[in-house]
Length: 102
Length: 513
Image 1 (tube, one colour):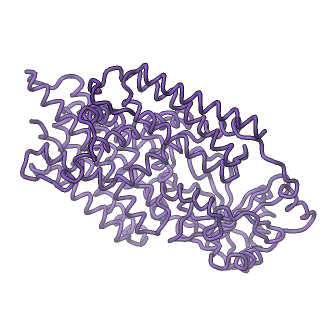
Image 2: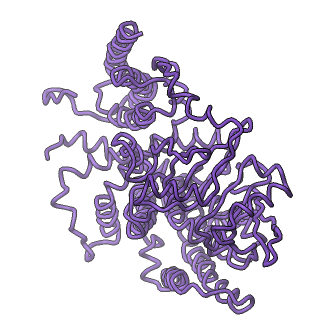
Image 3: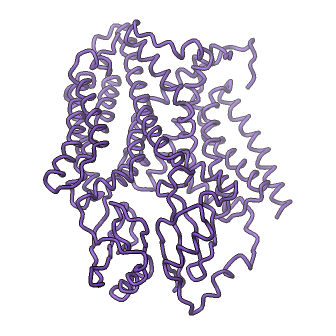
């Protein structure tokens, strides 16, 4: 997050919007990252393989961190915008890799 | 470490609100979770008086299995051979009469041989009390089913993560300055705040591990479904699937002695603890359980390997200590870090202490929040607590001290309940005690009830060593000096807090301005 001294100090205004962005888009982002990592590490859809079992522990904590840090956005609009952009790029990467590897 | 003042102020707010929303649930989760560190020994303790068939020598195991199969053919579908019997599983052979595991261990038939070589069996449901405490910890104190329980657990895990991150951010800049500044001379509120900080920082690694793994556990089911859609389907290896077992034909499975020998040959550093057989479509499969006290294992019961019961060859050693790939070792470590199943008893005790300390961290957090709110309300000219403050004060005292009382009541009752306590009985007892405590807190008011509730918790805790002694006097079972001394000291400590004026104030009864 940017730390521009000129801007007005952060406060709790718009916290609900920021948290909702973290909850909804944060979950989508964690899922997208799971997908990308799964493809990169050749995890298959079998529950017994170690890569898919290890990756299963990944989205939960990432989601928690995203929600926790969503308060740092300047405004609710910025939160939705930034997270949507991140989602777009991660999911685009996922579908690209998916098409490439399938 | 420099963090902007406005960010710290923002996160101080976030920390109090996230903490206050999750604190009550997390207290129960940590207190009950700390108790599950002693799940196996306490189960053994509860099952002391039972008279189950005695174990048979290893040479007679296959004779025992044959006779049991002749008398009850249904046992062949799933049974366990115990190689090292203990108080909870004293017989050499056991099988369950139902596969229903909703309430913990199912109704089990224990089998042995009498001196004339005849089959003797006895049916009993193993104690489900410790399983209840484990579920109480997983469902964060709410009597929910699996589905809703996971959902609420997920929400609380997220709140816990937020509270943890925000607490760390608030603390980082002043960490070195404030960490060991336990200002005992200042106001009580200052002492509590310093104590909350010190406890939080010292157990921070533990809390990070717990928050991360709890979030992992809570969302396991949906993530598994997601992995199925996102990941590419597995490449088919015809040789890896089916080929191993297909050659058994009409072959008979190896004798238990031969299985143990084969296991010792392939894993000479480990000792087989139990052989768990199950069969699907007439094909028998075998899981060899091992106990390894000091190694990293997935569950408190130990590690395991899958073996072909017809050839004695190990098929899968994914969760067998010392025989894992490093990736599976990493996976086991995730489980072990949550369950405290590494490094033996020292780590389990440490985990229990950290768990109870964590519970106290949430108690102190709630009391600090109440004190801050009261101070603000007084400065605004209110003479009595507002409705919100009163509610939280009642809930904090009633739920938190009620949980301590309820768990002590369950432990004290365990040895006297039929079959070591059925799930429903134990559940009813726990919630009855919790409800009584909540009612007391409601009638007396949160702050004034702390003394009486602590007294009740102390009395119920003191009942535990008394039951142990009473049982030993009436039925001649062995005394447990370790358990008795720990619970005695704990009970006395609770009583001291309840009756001495100064400690009662310390527990938050006078934590106003």
